[in-house]
Length: 257
Length: 194
Image (cartoon, rainbow over all chains, first blue to last red; front, side, top):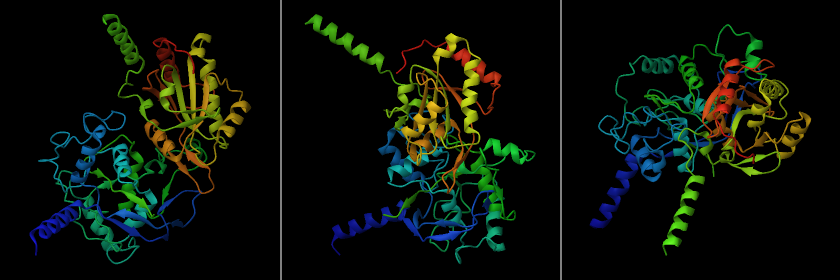
């Protein structure tokens, strides 16, 4: 084989295998969310879309920062990413390692930074319902939410201390769509995190919530055994766009062409 | 030669002062475009120079939104005439699908708003998402186009920095919020309205 061809193939395979930027097509469906509002329908129609196979890695985010220096730590405006927290685990603004490994999911990023990254890729953050829809699957079926083993697996991840090191992207079993790491790795931003209207006080009357949310009661969780999803809702409903945490990352979604 | 140099350096200095960058924590630095009830296309940089109470609403909202405007009036009524002239209001619609300059103008007329200080505006879905994220407003758009949302009044200083906010709506202004408004107005030099 000519040397030039070998080199080209090597570069191609090494970059694609580490790039992790594959988008997977998710077919349309009718989905029963466990989030219920007084005024919501039972099923939501979800149009087909594309979702990244794995969350965005430090390596990918680093490339974005080279091309978009206004998002570098130290340069980005405080209203878009909190100083002292944004990418605080990186060695310096353009060096993740040694603490942050290149193939770990990027964390300590705000919703603004995540949105900007996705936009730069001609993509967007997934909506909550899109995320919940894809995350309902295991490696066997599209809706595994009633499956005790699926819940056990996810709950065992929640039980791990936050101090244990983050695994690399792509380290969990792909679900039936071919998508990985929706469980067992990080919390993930969604485009409409702020649409999860949660009552701030159990003692609020229905009327108090109706005033707070202008005509709606707060959401309720239909399946109170679905602890995995409840945790995600609790997490997202408590966040502001500028916040970041050490276990909160993201992946991008895309509309079909 | 020296005279030319002097003149051009003075000109450059003036330009530099006029376009000094916004402070890093000013929310006016986003570049989303907003359209007012007068069909003017602006970015939030236009708000610079005046103290604003900012909020989000939508015109066809029957429930709490009318109260938001009443809350604005209640604040005005608690100010001195001098303070009242200096305080501006900027209300942005969350209903990017249905609110237009016409619906905004119609509401401004219906509520008798002093449009020299009250500006209503609409933007696209992306702009709504961005502003709501910056202001901490949470909202959910329903299938029928109505919107469930939190109601907040946010006080911006003349450089667009968030100074205070309140979720208390009604005829009795939030005392602390009112105090912040008075304090911010006191420390601001008014610039001509746009």
